[in-house]
Image 1 (cartoon, rainbow, N blue to C red):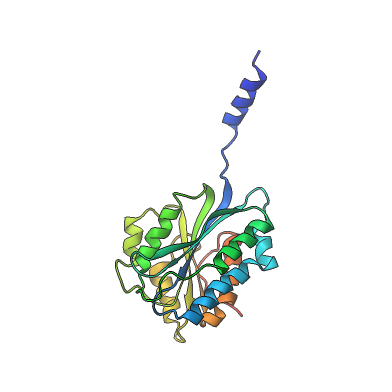
Image 2 (image 1 turned 90 degrees about the vertical axis):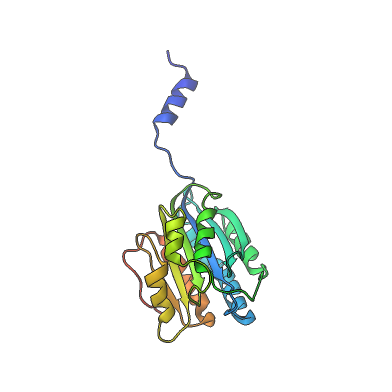
Length: 229
């Protein structure tokens, strides 16, 4: 007769393995020299406020037994990537509130560095080695300028592991939509990758709310144009 312990072990081996969470999400904020102190505050505090919105909380906690893992960092020059939030599994409203507080109370590391977007992508891809195994992995890049130091995004995609990683963009500024077009052409990557546009840093909070809702809802088919108000 098979023992109860052995039977349990056999059932466990036969059952399909499940990931620890449904989504691992990396938030990357641009703090290069083109972002002044007021603008940095608008995006940093704007992100913290968005994470406290009831609809964002509901999206994070929509599937109680399949939580979201969240981490965030700021980026600028080649070697200027500073963590704002270490990986945190968002399983309760308190977890999300703590993440919002960590980001909202964080301090900018540098304000005089160029825009090394390729290096930021390489750093972001490495963060997944430290996070939990999840059903999907996404990088959420916010920025207001083109890469102007180090290797460009396409070189980062060639040099670093980006299997099963979707990269979305939040393009800030420029009335001619130059940044949004640049992000669509050179930054976003993966199935359903999209760009949300913010008119300026004062519009960042609105754009980030829409962006997080789309990322938390699951795959998006195609690429997004300008965000609706």
